[in-house]
Structure formats: structure tokens, C-alpha cells
Length: 70
Image (cartoon, rainbow, N blue to C red; front, side, top):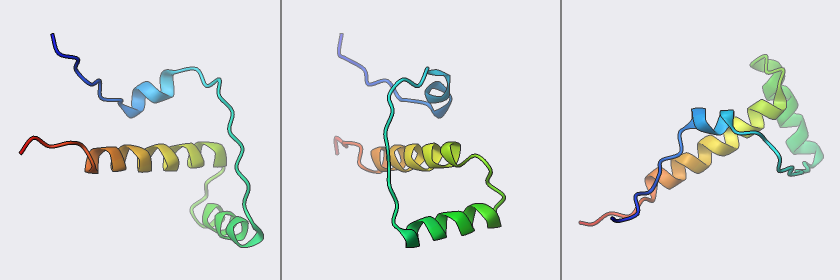
């Protein structure tokens, strides 16, 4: 049987235990933009916001660049 690629659903990503830590740094201008954005849209959990933004961008790119047969 051929290997079928498993589509990763966002809900499945949330259920997995998070054990891998990554660190990101911002300069003053980037942090100011993030702070203003979070204040404007009442985002209180920045970690969740960053995680969702990163994962949704990755999943969107994977979907756009999937291989086609024809």
C-alpha cells in the first residue's frame, strides 16, 4: 500500500503536549507594533497569538505549495 500523507488538522496540533521550546526576539519597532496590535484587538495571550499566527501561516503555505500531478 502506498504511504498516505496525513493532513495535520489545527485541532490535532492543540491536543499534543508542547515539549519543545523556541525563543524569539524582537527589536523595539517590532515590539511596539505587536504591543499596539494586541492592545487594539484586546489580545491578552500573546503566546497563543504567536503560535496560531505561525502555525496558520505554515499550514497555508503547505496548502498552496502541494505537489500536483497534472
